[in-house]
Figure (spheres, one colour):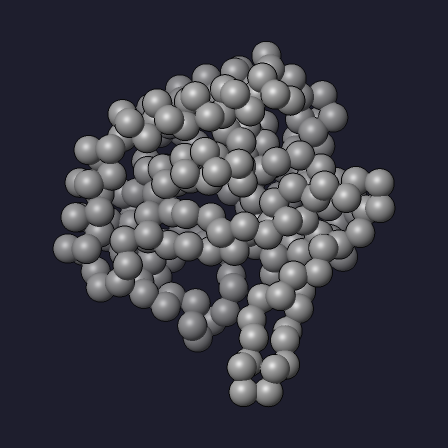
Length: 221
């Protein structure tokens, strides 16, 4: 939808301008709080534009230059790099591998706790929205590792990839964080509802509710 994309661009530009000083302050706090980069960049799965074929998109995720061997992963949508303020210690998943974050996660830094509680760690995703990787409203983008697993465990899961992922979404204003397969199934129902029936009115409504809940401290994107 051209009008929705125009709104995304306009609001992302306004958001980046208004939060420029905040970007600087948070960057300094993160560097003072723990060792590591300011931003956390991670591969996520975006929109699957191959709607008619419903085929997974095979993506190269690493390459061993010594032998030319390439490991590939069926990501079911176009992969992109998501930007966040770093909230965990450096190389937090080096030993444990990809896992869902949880309450009282020991990997989260002190300033990271504050960033997550206020959802300020998601602020750099305004760049993703401006680039066209994401929209302000849509299903939250998931990591290829989890998409591959959930696609095999939950029927219709990949249908949520028919539209651009969002900074927030209907599932985020209706439910809490993922903590089990059942919670993912519950969120999927809301994601598909927006995918099938979402319009500009619901776009603004979800953004308004998200902003209100962030101010009240009642939402975790």
